[in-house]
Length: 335
Image (cartoon, rainbow, N blue to C red; front, side, top):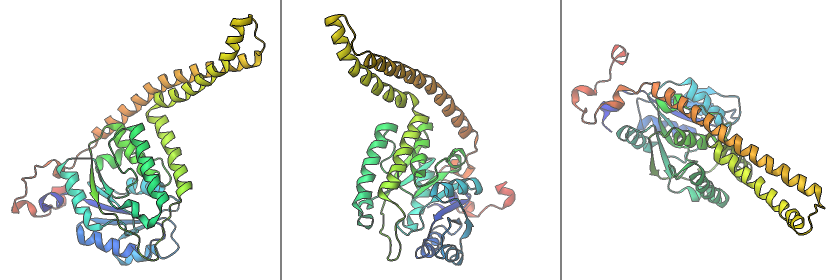
């Protein structure tokens, strides 16, 4: 990477951790070797195995986040840390620190707000076929609901611009945070990129914290909530259509009897079908109204995103790699 570009930028490496004492030391040292000028932050999420100590011994800045869950940690990181470029990875050693340089290069050259390191070997993750199947299904569902911007929404290895981080609301509490990041980028139509990287297996003594069914249910619920917030017309129209079809199904035999005999013998069924039809109309109306609200909220988020400054080094042309520009600017220059 042309050092004239990265020397002008503050890079922060963010490592959320929970019981990763066996791997966090080598991970921190790997990032220090790859990005020697970057600040490495480890946020310990109530670990009980000495993760914080190992991270400090490796040279990282360590902070403890007491609220359990990756989403809480990422929200705290994004609020606490000020930088030009952010790199987030897991502390379990499954992502190669040496790939961070390529993530930063892609972020700068493509002038993207987020670069996702898609996982080449994710289906071999500890041999857990449930995770592999869930990844495929959820990625397909994401592309169906929110668009084709991403092929691996659960990747934990990403690079962000300051604009992305400081405009990202981050409401998730757990592993759904990656899905929320992807939806945020799709919602605001931010420039994003994907970079295929190798995905390693956990070393001996390190165990996955994911539960196939529990976390899968949380992610599915997050899909529904994000669809309600970002695509309310589609969300409420789908529910409205379900109520309408149910209403028509229960209404049909009553109408058939009425046209044949002129009588309505099943009055409770008729009342129920009409109630379901009214609920369907109300849900459709709610979808139309909330769609306008969602568009206004997206516009406000976009305006806030545009109000954030882009680092001058990120706007500089790539040809600006002269020897004279390689000296790191002092505090007066940075100001």
